[in-house]
Image (cartoon, rainbow, N blue to C red; front, top):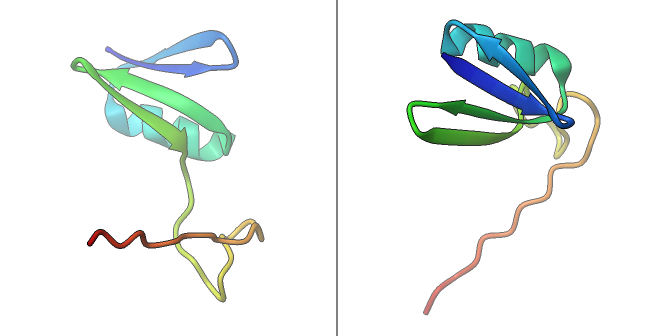
Length: 67
């Protein structure tokens, strides 16, 4: 059983594919739990174009160098 936690509610799915599809359509931060693992984030971002996510939000990333 796959569960998704979103806004203090828990939703159940039979497969990880079903859970991921639901999370992508929701477009909000969720936590997916299965097999003693947790995956947290906002799912559904397919790529970065011109420094922005598909929804128009700017993409910010900094590489930290270790010496």
